[in-house]
Image 1 (cartoon, helix red, strand yellow):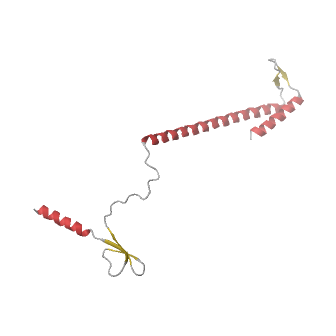
Image 2: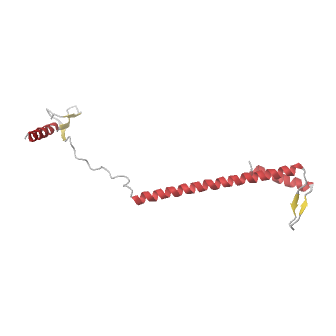
Image 3: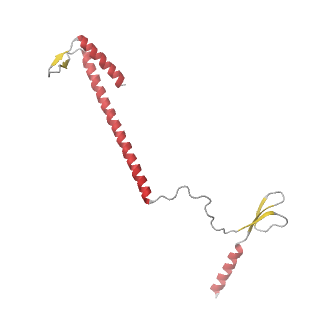
Length: 152
């Protein structure tokens, strides 16, 4: 019996605590919100429930929830893009390393041309022949131009 009386008192208290809220505009065109009804003339009286039901969304969601298949596809796409970027970076690094090696070899050849030691070139028949001073000057000038153009 005591439990029933306690439940009844609790229920009555909860109902009393759920007061009404009123909103209206007075004569000065100000919006008034109160828990008591207005006294006197008002415009646009509106009663507001304190426990309002959830309102439906005013506009549909911009993007619906993605399915597992969509997320998996996006994940795989990001993985592929990362692999492509890594491969491109690796190829660029290899090309730069090759370019540095070629430039170093060209510098070495230019130093040997400028040193004055005897240089031999292939003759096209499997043999080789020594170059003379005029040919050495042409090859040296060509090597300098190549180094300036390609190896900055």
